[in-house]
Structures are given as structure tokens and as C-alpha cells.
Length: 114
Length: 112
Image (cartoon, chains in turn blue, purple):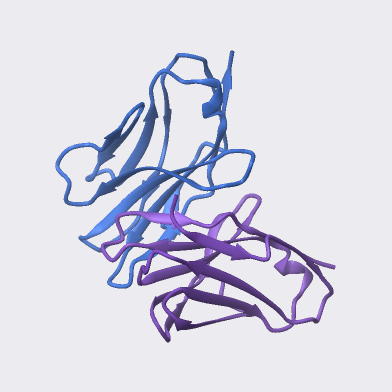
């Protein structure tokens, strides 16, 4: 079974609108972490946001928020007020296990339309 | 920016030749990782290290070996490169609690 599933290969959003990128995960470990990364066309991996499995509140970082629904095992990324510079690949990832092993999804390509 | 340096940044080699990629960190983090990125697959973990001389396999470890003799360096070796190993390779480091993972700039490897 896939550890991380991103079902949206590509998404489009109008500039200044909000967009939600979906991510579901699979783990039996009670302690885990969930991450979102952005990869622009230049290729670097940029950390966006982190949510721990025991965190009670959804994580937020500026225009990014992580909608954490533990029972559904989902960790969707919400980007508010989209900007042209948000056009990129977005990867969801999970960290689990005593040796901090990481798993990544296949990514969602987001295009922001002017 | 986290102090992670990957070398070389680009490499073209021939099938059957050995290749070693280097990841160097200045953050003194315990955990280091090697990933490969291919279209349609996202990032897949090759090997990772949880300390000096302590390494473990990831999900796509066949054909790769690693070594970590110092905290700051994590080497990835392709003993006999194949065309299927043409990819972009990323090194990453993680803090002890695993709450963040920083990536290097990547190495683009072409095996002809």
C-alpha cells in the first residue's frame, strides 16, 4: 500500500483565489509527522509546513495551512490568496518510525492563472 | 539555508562505470538521506543514515550502496551504473526530532 497518496496530478487556480491540494497517508505508527514541500521549476525542494501527529491544532505558516484530519488520515494543504509564484510542484511527505524514515507522494502540479 | 552541499551537480557517465555522489552537511545533524526523483514517481528513498556507520535501505536500494564515516559526509555509490539509474538525486538532512528535513540542490545524473 502507498504510504502517501496525492490524487491530483495537476491543478489550476485563479490568482488571488484559495486552493486545496489533497494528501492521504497510511501508517500504524502513533507518532508521525506530515510535511509539504514546494518544488519550483528551478528544481530545489522548499519546506513549507509541518504537522505532528499529536498536534491538536492545524499548522499554519503565512498563506499555507495544513488541514489535518487524523481519523480520515488526510493532510491537505490549503494555499490562500494564490500568487503567480505559487506555480510549482507540491509534494506531501510523512516521517515515521524510530529512525525517522520519510515517504513522499508523487506530487501535484499547481498552475496559477493570472 | 541549511548547509548541504551535493557534488557533483551534474554528471554524465557510461553504463557499467562506478559513480559516487557526495553529500556534505555543516549542520551536524544525525540523519541523512539519499532520494531519487523521477517523473511520475515523486521522491523515492534509496538509503538513509541515522548516525556514523549506521545506515539502512529505503524503498529503491537495489544497485546502490552508501557509506557514512563522518557525521558531515554521506556518500552514495552506484557500483556499476545502468541507464535506469539516470535520475535526479537529492540528499537531505533531518534534525533529531525529524520535524523538518532540508534538501540539497540535487545532482542530475545521466547514464548513457
